[in-house]
View 1 (cartoon, one colour):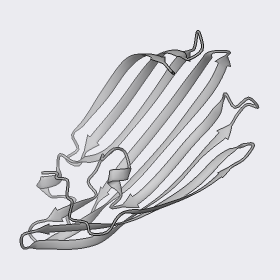
View 2 (cartoon, rainbow, N blue to C red):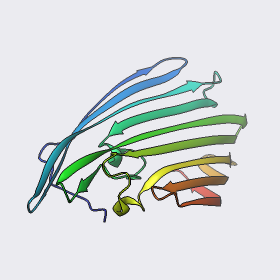
View 3 (tube, helix red, strand yellow):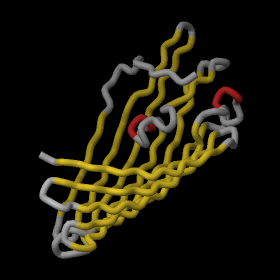
View 4 (spheres, rainbow, N blue to C red):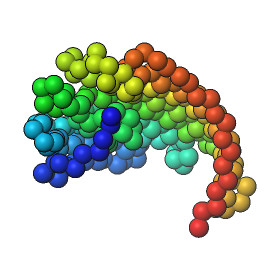
Length: 195
């Protein structure tokens, strides 16, 4: 079973370096953290880390249209990637060993200003999880996530100041460690008043 564990003794350390200019923005970020389990006779500690690069490139002088992207890779950093899509680590109760979980995630989004008050967005994302070879075939993780991707497109209209009306179409697919997979197709409507 997946559990949230609060046995870490050290705080997570993060750092980010960002650049902003006329053509866009770029950033790199890093994470270092301790993963620790103390459960009766089972006790182990391992180092978790993550690296991320992101950016936004303006496609128009008025900055209404842009291309955004981000790629992240880490081992033991899953809590920061994809809203806990994968565990940070997996404990092998037979050996008492805490195995790290490697995660890669990427996304890209294109925002296009079509007319005053009308914009469209196209988005794609992908995430892949790699479990340690020692536990990859274990039946206990068969229901854990292995991979997911999604594509979405939306159209937003701002008829008056502070009001946004939108329509979005989304398709996504997810695969588990066992090979089972499923998909999601969704149509969403949105109305927002900003104040």
